[in-house]
Amino acid sequence: MNDSSQDSNFDDIIKMKKGHVLFVEGEPSNYLYIVVSGEIRVLKESGKRLIPISIVRERDFIGELSMFSDEPRAACAVATQHAEVLMIKKTEIRKVIKSCPDWVSEIMITLTDRLRGGIEILREHRIIDDIFEVGNDLSTEEEKNLQNEIQKYRDRRGLS
Image (cartoon, rainbow, N blue to C red):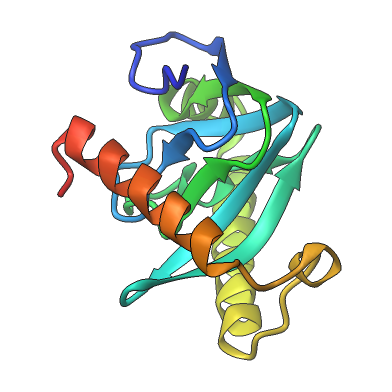
């Protein structure tokens, strides 16, 4: 079950079944996620279509771009197989960084901004990392199922 709405101090493990939504585009970003096991697919909504962006696997993380900004999520994340994900509150990450010298947080903010800009350039030019290795296209049925799960998630959270 996806428990990403629970209030946590630092590190909760979310157990997700295949097809469960971790977060959706436009949703507030309050957590960084580390994939402990399984696989999460990142998808960008484009009109009525879903465009696969990347696949996040064991020991990879997702949500890093929101650590220093309060911008909403820029994509959706859905489990493509059973997964366990460690969620870390953005406020906890910020507390740790605050204990560092100011120049450390300035470097982190700059690196995050550069990463965000680089990702946008890659997306704009369709130069996308590992998604090509696993298949860039979603079948019509797969896309429809993902859209249904994303809509159900939005309805449950009042994000529609």
